[in-house]
Amino acid sequence: MPGETDEAQEQELHKIILYAHKKGYQVGIHATGNRSIDVSLDGFIKDIETYPGPSKRHYVIHGDMITNAWARKAIPYDVGLTLEPEVGTLIYEATTPFIGKKASRIYGVKELLDCGLWISGGSDCPITYPNWRKGLEAAVTRRSATTGNKHCPELGVSVAEGIKVYTYGGAYQERFEKVIGSIKINKVADFQVLEKDLFSVEPEALGSVDVVMTVTGGKIVYEK
Image (tube, rainbow, N blue to C red; front, top):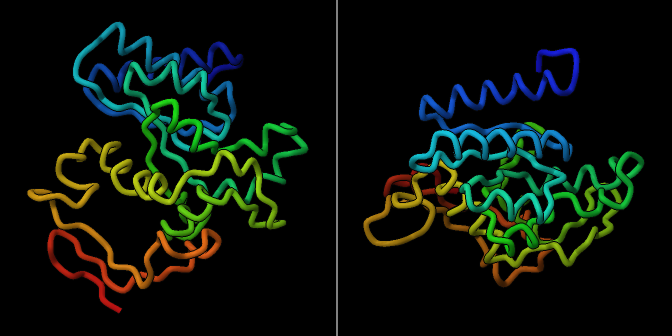
């Protein structure tokens, strides 16, 4: 952000958030370090309180260092998080020299969901491939792609929780949860048929489960 000091940069960011919020836009901010995450939330809250109205569902993108305290502060304002669990598997060890033990708690999806924070899942493609089953595996196992070690496995989600992050979570972020995101009567028929039941395979094999059919709007758009 423009500005010669942290404070000046924060003010500039808040000006941008305010401008978009007043225009009725949803705002998503890339933020990884704890300070940038906190500053983003402070901007969201200030503007929502000053100019209330229908929720814009502002959100932070990545949010590696988001804490339970941050989540609890964000929830009343319907501010959420979109993250990429597979990216975590690439940076657990890489970030340890800089942030120590905190690195093992990056992308603690389970505890954030338990707080009530809404979360959507992504891939950060081309950082990783846009294979949501890989992201699901990472969120469940928290296994490092570098060493194979599992980092704070207690923060791993269940398969059902992970699937919801990658389906309903994305729909909620886009404010389309009444149209897509789950298989229900009167919703758009967007779904995939997989070669195996995700609830029956080993967690470490979730990412290798292949797609045999993709249906969008009730029409088959891919078939193996």
